[in-house]
Length: 513
Image (cartoon, rainbow, N blue to C red; front, top):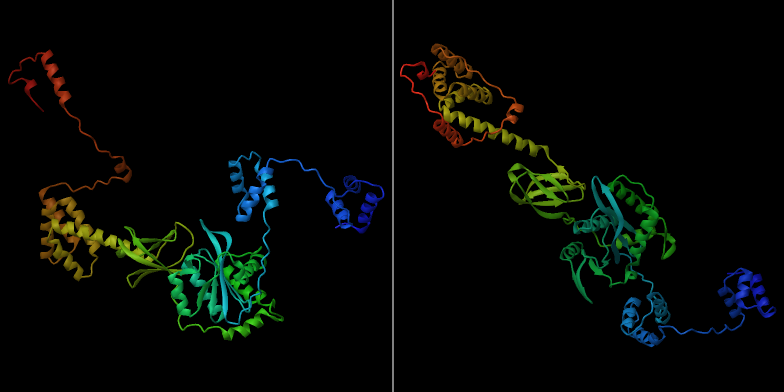
């Protein structure tokens, strides 16, 4: 807009001083279109401009014809079509020509939708970028539900859009509203609509089962008709601008707690659009008794996944490993995951339960699972040692039974008898065990005394244990034997080249020490 003084000046210079519009624009410091507009409003006809011929002029009738048949045809496709027909111009100018001749679409008018209280709700997902959890980068999404009549809102943030999270949002939303609307409107998202051809719609069977439990009707909006669920769209915009923008939060639970507080205070204190004298909270109090009642039980909405435990006692789920009992390896198990817990089932038996982690490549362990595996390995090692002892000296079984009756430590006794077996051999150990049992002294110390006495009687040196350090064992390398054929050839050559002198039978050279 320009001032009235400038308009009067433009008219005076044009009519009195006979200045052309271009001179007026330069001298008055305004755009020439502004001068032309002022003159046109004053009834001055615009001067006719000489039009230069253009390369696109011969193709204008073809462009107009195609745009009448296909009003939304893109300029890039039209450019390819006219280029095949001989057009040699550039695409930039061609786009302006297409825009000038494209038929204008009439603006569509919409009816204001009014819904009865308790009749309808609207549902959608909203994306809020990504969030880092440990070393994992997750998508931050928000489940949004709005009651169409009262505009009461519910928000729940999460890090996935799986069916389990979608249904969990419904359960929490119905619980927050204290009831269920008779109809829920959905966009054509995969969690609701699997396939659509015109009016023929195939709903997700899991959603149909869920809707049957709560007795509401799922209803998708028409394709590309976001105005049919404009209340949840406006709610998402309000969440972005009035709640999420510049908000500080520690984790997802803290963000959800703040979202719940915002929905109960700021979001309900605004005026109700249908009656500015009421607030959204007041309208909700009128709508709440008209909602469908909640069922007596809530459906199971946990994520279910069949997994396989490998050789190690862990199952893989959502980028992390969760421990299971060691006797469940090498078999298929079932993971049931809620928002905060992960349960592992073998058939109908619960075998493990952990806190859920949204990090990645972590091992979440129940210490009892690992301790049980360690104990089993130790017991197996002990059993192998006992078997080796009993195979070498079967009489050791009687000695161990006597020790068990006296409450002795069988592990220490087995280790002591194995050391004696290594030093003295199986035959001597068997004799010593028999002597200890005959003397009613079933203990490794008595067996050792018997062996020491028998060794001293025979005049043998005491056995010496050679302890080799781990570093020395690490330096040991197997020696590959070499063939001695080369040495035989050397001996043969030497024998052939040097005669051997005869040796007398009793000479010193014939003696071998």
